[in-house]
Length: 129
Image 1 (tube, rainbow, N blue to C red):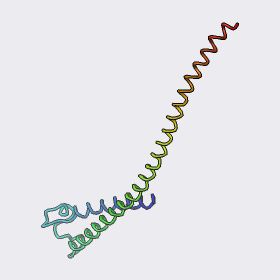
Image 2: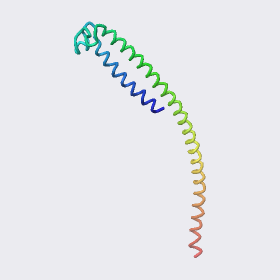
Image 3: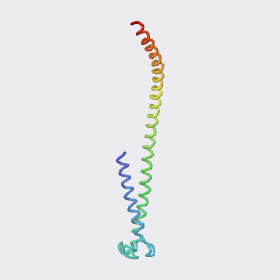
Image 4: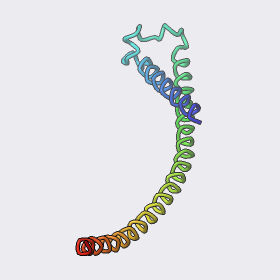
């Protein structure tokens, strides 16, 4: 799924760049950025150039929305799966932490008793010699 996601993101970037460029090239009454690239009559695309640019822009807008929805759906599926995995991992970590704290409590209890016995043995040992 990562490959599909990477392809969709790459296509999304390309569509965005093309869409921005097409909107910049279009001109309205010879007062747009399109006039900077060759005049007001869209002579680069012929007599029906405005309709070609308009149709192309419409197609790119549809692709933009389709790709956006596709990326959102893929992220939602991965997000749900990832959060389920995180939840399972968190539960495992909590149970491990609980076991560790129980072990630490026992170690503390046993450690104090063992230390007391060691101290008593150390006190008795010099007296026995």
